[in-house]
Amino acid sequence: MSAFWLLSRYLQPYRRFIAFNVGSNALSVVFSLVSLTMVMPFLQLLFDKVTPVTVYPAFSWSISWLTGLFNYWFSQAIVQYGKSGALWRVCVVVTVVFLLKNLFRYLAAYYMAHIRNGVVRDMRRQLFGKLLYLPLSYFSDERKGDLNVRLTNDVQEIEQGMVGLLETAIREPLTVLCYLGAMLFISPALSIIVLLVLPLTGWIIGRIGRSLKRRSHEAQGHLGLLMSIIDESLSGLRIIKGFAAESQQEQRFAEHNERYTKTMTAITRRRELASPLSEFLSIATVSFLLYVGGVMVLRQTAGLSADTFIGFMLIFSQLIPPAKLLSTAFFQFQKGKASLERVEAILNTPNPIVDPPNVLTCRGFDRQIDYCNVSFSYPTADIAKMPPVLRHISFCLPKGKVLAIVGASGAGKSTLADLLPRFYDPTEGYIAIDGIPIERFSLSSWRQQFGIVSQEAILFNDTVRNNIAFGCDMPAPSDADIENAARIAHAHSFISRLEQGYDTIIGERGSKLSGGERQRLTIARAILKNPPILILDEATSALDSDSERAVQEALTQLMQQRTTIVIAHRLSTVKNADEIIVLSEGNIVERGTHAQLISQNGAYAQLWAAQSSLAIKQFRA
Image (cartoon, rainbow, N blue to C red; front, side, top):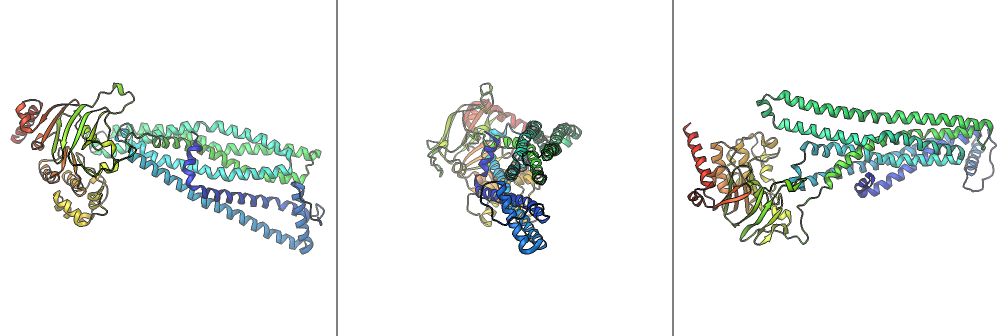
């Protein structure tokens, strides 16, 4: 699909503004051409170079009719007002014509401003929306820094290169066509020479500019990698400093920064070549025309007089600025085209997790959740070589019960829970509620059924109040509702001690709070949402004993009368679950209550014994 066709999709909502822009540019060019062509015939009459015309010329589509018409009007002005009066009036007319020319040029820019910024806004919004709705599996293969570059730098390159070219592509061709038309009227022979030389100029510029697209792809890739290194370094400063790895990370950044700089230098050199090259080629064409036209005037061939030739060259000189602008815009276009392809690569990424036809709205459930022969493998280029993460998992979770999932790291615990809110879809089997496969429900209504508290407390650089209210499907939760959720989550006491209470900005990812405080805020968020299904994914594993005790009390409040899936390494937190599933290498190896699994003396009993022994040693230490 061509770049212009891709861009045209974003221009559809702005057809009216494009029409206004084209009309304003056309009028600007017409008034510019009139201002150039009306002076020469008047000066010829003023200084007695031609005979005054006293008879209105008969109409015909020819340069002689236009010249005769100008001569008639100017002759009448000289007869009626004298040469001084006619000169003054012509100066006023020229001033008004230039005023109108620049007025319409401003109007064209006025309408184009709405188009340029509107297209960029729409593109950025579509790109961000697409990223929000893509499945989690997409982000496992993408660098966050590169996605940031596509959202910011690539979109800006499109605005400067491609949407900016739209303005040039509308105004400058109109200018060239109008001036070429006037030149054809004046001297068809010289105009044919111009038409033969200009394509050669465009071909030379195009040959140089084609490499820009490939280089721009490389540059944006290097920039995305740099952004990823910056993001990882700022996020992991504690580890970098703790391992005294500042010089190592600095060297890594310097290497990629050097690659990006070399690529950008090559791009800049080629882009800066556009203006001097086009100017040189234009001057070479002017020199060639001066020679050919001068010879024609001297030999009096093709009816070309000296004053007509000067007028022709005056008009041709006005072709040089738009030719330079077009060549420069062509170089920018190549960069913008590379960025557009990078943006379109995201927008065209298929999303396998979508609403089906005849979608249902989920309003809760009455009986149970069923995993029916569920298997799952993470998407990869060669899925045949990817071992399955889950193998033929089947179990039933009755409404209001607590299911615990335990096992070693990498056993598939989190993946098993992630399938329920459809972060991924099973590669085999299905999940159902009350006998209805969850794929039948709209994603929005299905995910409204969940509250999720994960090991990493996901918070935003906003107020405590807005973090608790985040994702709440209430129209507008009241302050009392938010405070009540915080009290249940054992968070109200520390929130009250903050400088501005519930209106305190907590910093990026809640950096101003301790780990336990952050986790209690996420629990308050889940309490306020009041979901029927709760997923607790290692919610206390990263906390110290005191924080764990406070968070566990909050979780106990949260779990009351809710269907809950608990993922835990610390078995002491799940021994009261209604059922415990033990996973090993994607298979269910044991299931039952805590007492039943202990009596079986199997994998769970061994894990329990190992953790109990470790806890005793830590206590004695």
